[in-house]
Image 1 (spheres, protein in one colour):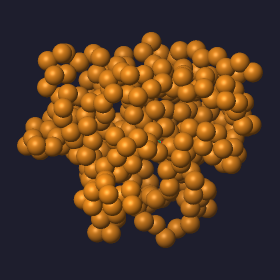
Image 2 (cartoon, helix red, strand yellow; image 1 turned 30 degrees about the vertical axis):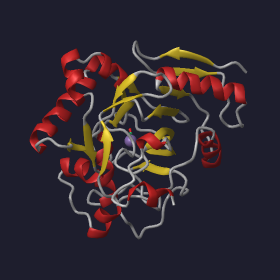
Image 3 (tube, helix red, strand yellow; image 1 turned 90 degrees about the horizontal axis):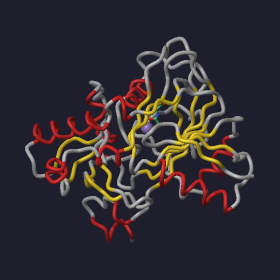
Image 4 (cartoon, protein in one colour; image 1 turned 90 degrees about the vertical axis):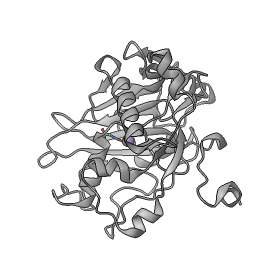
Length: 302
Ligand code: OGA
Ligand code: MN
């Protein structure tokens, strides 16, 4: 089968046809998808729905899966295989999560513009989100290309931010929602990390902003100044004309490159409608983007 890509938005994003994701893909198909990702950053595939095993097999073509270690510690069994992240409003019995459920409140943070796992020592390279049950209204996912955000910044601002670093923490994005009830153990397990604000996207050689709701402040700057800058840059990046909105159908699979995009979920009637999505996440093992933490590189690679 020949893979074809058709643009979804003037700036980025493409619909893929001619790939059967239920079977192992050939090297030639993989190369076409990799090139498509490097160019378009977001690729959309239409169903039919895949089994969790098929999703994992396809995802693994793109690299090593992120180990599942949720930030919030729950004594409840997981609803989905440990290789996938549960992006749903459902509990372990497939019932709607209660309004006060911590898992629901934590998941609301996905509705803030972010890139996946920027707060982890090893961030995410790609995410592959697959739709099993979709909502009749709302629940879209929106994307922006952060290379476009960089390209459209005034040169003076580009020069000002070129060498800056930001601190990223999951507790920063959740605090924006007023969700701060984390245990000491949960906080200690995911310490803040440092990330360059401007990077070169390896697949395209283009410069990109790297920001997220998790970005707290700019290293070496007073916190309020850094926070305002981050706010201004995210506002710039997410102007309506830069946004692609994906309306989900059952069986859709969307891959995005976390190194040069941001995304957010849109609200929906969580109390009455089920939304069941599952995400495979590929680690970004590029040594240049690791944060080795207080123990340093030697300890991390030992
Ligand atoms: C994710 C995510 C948003 C959504 O899967 O990483 O942020 O629309 N999803 O569910
Ligand atoms: Mn996400």
